[in-house]
Image 1: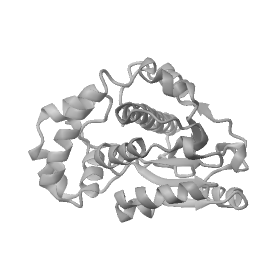
Image 2: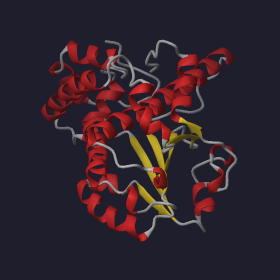
Image 3: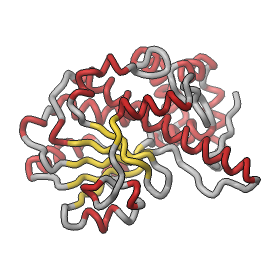
Length: 277
């Protein structure tokens, strides 16, 4: 397997041990169903998430590959599978922060209670779009640097940012089983993929829900969550984003793009959905 990439992760001795425990079938399932396969960066991310317990990581990764094959037939979840979710305009792409993290904007007031399994499929559809876009952008930057004959002046650690606009969130948007399923998905299948989460204008009802859901999160995950108010949104967000990568609600000029439109952009530039690493 080709296991080096442009992310410049330091080699760790556990990577070689883990690789020996994993079959080529695991690698092939991941690649066939839209992930990067067993690169050093991918393995290090999972080892980090499992506190470098090699045997646990091997077990969880094998289970993840089998799950991926069931959940994502082909290389991505197709639009028609999540058509009803797309109609509600819940998730948008909102550019990238200054560290090249693809950023998703989630409109809390548009959340509609769904079957937890269907919610899992939709979040998979959404996160995969962000990750594919992040790889595509970095591959283009790498090619531009190569053509200029200069080294890459930026990197991406393979993680994403989520911005939750909770200003219109209410009782009708709460569905504990679905929201619990999202947290389970992140911790079981998108290991070490979240860089930071901003929660904007959270009402008191959400704070109550968060107190319950946060019990399901590890401490390092809770530390990534930042609550921001309407009054300090612009000054806080500009610390991480350029103005042209921020939605107008946060003092920026970027027009958020629907996730299905993001997939159209990705496939226009990478029709086979090759995983660019």
